[in-house]
Length: 111
Image (cartoon, rainbow, N blue to C red; front, side, top):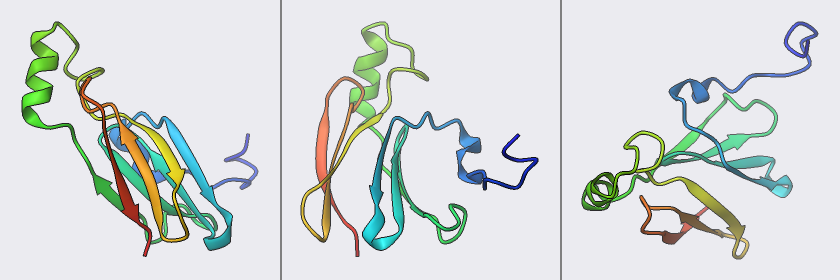
């Protein structure tokens, strides 16, 4: 219904089956951060398909192998699923992911 009424703009970058898990709205800069499987997206709130910035942040290969050896599914469990997007200060966001069952965190500069 939303598409038929032209009330929304679908995000075309999601065709990769990225399994979005967490969002952070930055109203001050009209941006949306979206955490997904192995990726963090920085989207424009006016048009989510305009000037999309993407960070590829996979789990380390050795952690993925350990995950698979533990009997986990390589496609649905052994990845870096971004779970935390938290403002840190005016210029950085604190980010954490599952890291194929070996969590990892870091900071992203929003400049």
